[in-house]
Amino acid sequence: MRIPRIYTADEQLQVGTMVTLDREASNHLSRVLRLRVGSEVVLFNGDGHDYQGKIEAIERNQVQVHLLQAQEINVESPLYIHLYQGVSRGDKMDLTLQKGVELGIKEFTPIITERCGVKLDEKRWAKKIQHWEKVIISACEQCGRNQIPKLNPVTPLSEAISKRSGQDFFLHPDAETQFKSYGAVNFEQSISLWVGPEGGFSEPEVDEVTRNDITPVALGPRVLRTETAALAAVSVINSVWGDF
Image (tube, rainbow, N blue to C red):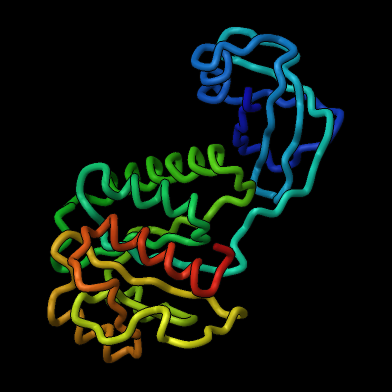
């Protein structure tokens, strides 16, 4: 049986100490997985270590874990991939974030574009960000990453472009360049990938990103859905320059 991995926001984890998990994590271990006192678990807090421990006590809505060993583990991609993703509707954004974490993306910026179908006020955007953070953490628990990817606030496209840095590519079905024909990249700089929402970038937006020296690339002759395009592109980037 695979040992469960659980994220904790505790900033300082130390071998030999006891950690009290929050209500959500405690409920998952005790009621969903039905673990018992003495069961093994792995905790991580984003510092690059896995902390092996055993459940010491289970009380109402509270699980205590005794930390027995710390191990530094690095499963991170050698590439710093930053995904600028046009916000998509329904659970498509969740899927992009979840699988993007599995594929090694280190930073996400949700962007608002002309064809974005999601219109929320500031309060509801904040709730969306909280939800997406949970999606990212859950994906880290599942895939073995112990460094949490960064999630930036929802940002309008033009503002995101003005703050960009690194090597930039945006997906466009009519582009003449493909990743495999681009050549070498600078591993000391981030690789930024720009993906539009359903319907893609508008023509004025395509002109804007092109004026800012963001390289258009195509993913073959077929038109991909936004969630497919982002994940396919990251997979290709990892295959051409990364650790695939």
